[in-house]
Structure formats: structure tokens, C-alpha cells
Length: 127
Length: 139
Image (cartoon, each protein chain N blue to C red):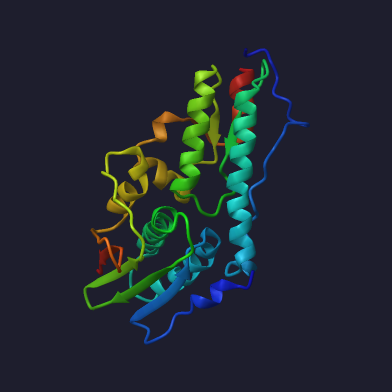
């Protein structure tokens, strides 16, 4: 497993909305954030339902500006489905307060295989 | 759809802030921001303001998800501060049962218990339906 390489150039990726301080009061920003959760859930479910050999799933929360229970439930569901199929998703970007506090309070931090950044997952898996 | 966030207009003196919020998840982002702006004037630390905003968000999300699952409705948010406390009250007019904190679907409730200094939840069959009162000590 360690000899496989993660495709870094053409990997599928769901981008979180950029933190845009000039538009913090608009509903567009929240609509976008909600849509990101929905898209992420669809993406994860698809990957979990159709696992391909030698593929790793990395969920990077480094750019989220808010992370609540609904987002956490999505992650938990995806992780449970993935685990049943022998895939272990990695979680990155979970060190900043908005994410770390939620994982800590709910006692779920240790449920996820966390690493600081996507690059560090690549390094870890490529050994 | 018209910008229903316009319903969520705070008014009154600075020691209190009220909003009527449509039961839509899309309305919550703006509310988080406005509530944070108000809470920063109360004397709470920035970290506690984050907790207050997050706990309130989860209370509002619960109302939207459970009280108004099949219909539109309105949630009342009232925030005030005294010399010693900051209190946020979230009131809906629907019917839902507060899950046991140990239940998995009670994750939001468990989180609110941890984020607030004190939490009281009252559920009625009529109107108001469920009221979540969250409070934080000042100083």
C-alpha cells in the first residue's frame, strides 16, 4: 500500500467556499456553505459505494469557516460506510478551533485518522 | 424567493437583541454573523462568543430540523445581557421531543451542554413549542 502514489494532479476534489469577509452577511455565502456539505456528502457516498483499488479518501476541513453538527454527521456517516468497505478516510485541517473544538467536545477526535495537511497524508502513505 | 433574512432584524437597546428567523437553514449564516457582532459588545471573551454563536446555531438548527420538519415556521431568538450573565433564548412553535443527551441524534444537545455555562430546555405541546435557554457568566 505504501508503494502506491496518490494522484496529486488529477484527484477529485470538492472545494470549500473561500472565507469572504466582504460577504459575511449575505445568504449566498450560507447557501454556498450548505451546498458544500451536500456536495461533499454525495461525493463521499459515491466514493464509498464504488471504492476503487488503491484509492484513499482525504477530507480536508482546513478552509471551512464554520463546522456544526450537521457537517459532523455527514463525516461520521461517510466514515462508517467507508470502514465497512475497508476504506479508512483521513481527516486533515482539523486543527483550527472551529473544527477541533467540535471534535473534542463530541469525543470524536480519535475516531478519525487525522493529519495536519493533505500533503502530510501523501507523505505518510507514500512512506 | 425574497430575501427572508430581512425578517431577522435586530432592534431595541444594545443590551438586548431580538430576531425572528424563518425556518430555513440558509437563514442561519447571516444570523451567526449578526449574533456574533452583538455578543462582542457584551464583554464576553472572543472564545466564549464563538461558543455562544455555535450553541445558538445548533439550537436554531434543531428547531428547523425537528419542529418545522414538514412546514415553514418562525423561530424567535432573544439575546440579552445583564451585569452578570449573557442569555440567549431560542423559541419555536412546533412539536418535537428533546432526545436523550447520550443518543447519537442528540449530538447537538450534547454540544450545547458543553458550550454553554447553563442550558434549560422546556418543551410544550402547544405554543410556544420548545424553548432553549442558554446562558454564560460574565467575568
